[in-house]
Image (cartoon, rainbow, N blue to C red; front, side):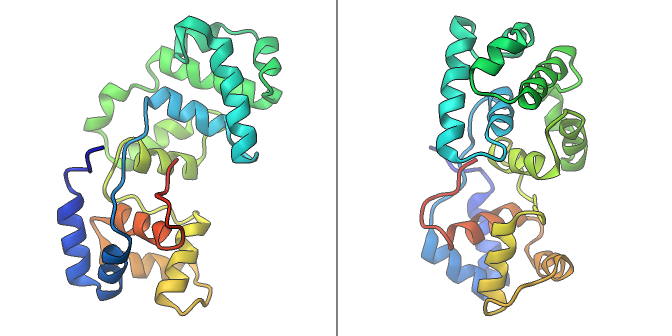
Length: 207
């Protein structure tokens, strides 16, 4: 799959400005890849909250089957009965979140066509208006679906762990320290974050 258009420039700039990051980039290689349809990506993030990857996949498969030929689209999900959603293995709260997500797409309160005109914070605010979507989920969406280049998810444990191991000899760091370190990576903090995930796990990070 094709890499983001900014990826090579970002890697070259990061390596030039930060020797440690440069070594990580050479060691890990690879690049970020966009993941799927916006509505389905957000729906999957809701389904997967607070359960294992295996359990989430099982519930998702049942949910997709329940959606039938129409597929996982806002109109179909908005019309599904709560009892149907519960039979897929969803909690009542997650079922409500999915209905709310579908409603936001149908009403135009969430409109992917507008996103190219909006900055990151505006999209995060739009997504966080949906029940069950918080800032971390919205930031993951900006990274993995929209491929925004300068997202810096400070609530992500993996990012903070990566900074600690690569820049602080494993000593825990504060959010303030992470912010300060990340300033050197602007405007490519998404790329730096992705490589800090990758250096801890050889498999490419997906969301």
